[in-house]
Length: 160
Image 1 (cartoon, helix red, strand yellow):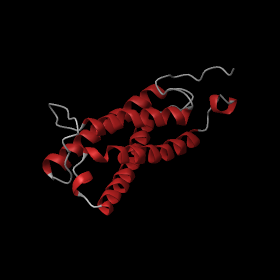
Image 2 (cartoon, rainbow, N blue to C red):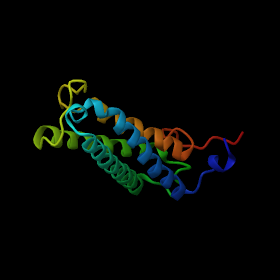
Image 3 (cartoon, rainbow, N blue to C red):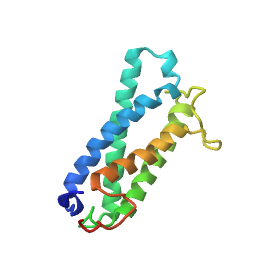
């Protein structure tokens, strides 16, 4: 690993990588999970493209706001060199919480979208497993790539 990535003191750079990476990885996730929604078989190509782009932009906004709120609460002056674990955990908690609320509101209350029979759901909440996993996997992966180490670690390893 390059020395400048291991001694990463440029938090704006980490934030830019996180936002850009979130946009790309959420876009891929949204495309891959589209068959888990009824839009896959009942929507036109135009409706599918709009839904994927709309959801991806929303995902990027949620990702950015979740990280910024976590940094405002737990961020240290030398983040991301230290203090990544609490920031990562709160980022996940905020993203997962919003996802559970949003899926409930849009599937059960508003009927804005519907799951296909392929979507596994949580028994109690009825929330789709794919969007829930999205808000665990994507922020973890993107934060890992943005800070050049697993986000659950609080120290930068010594240069090799």
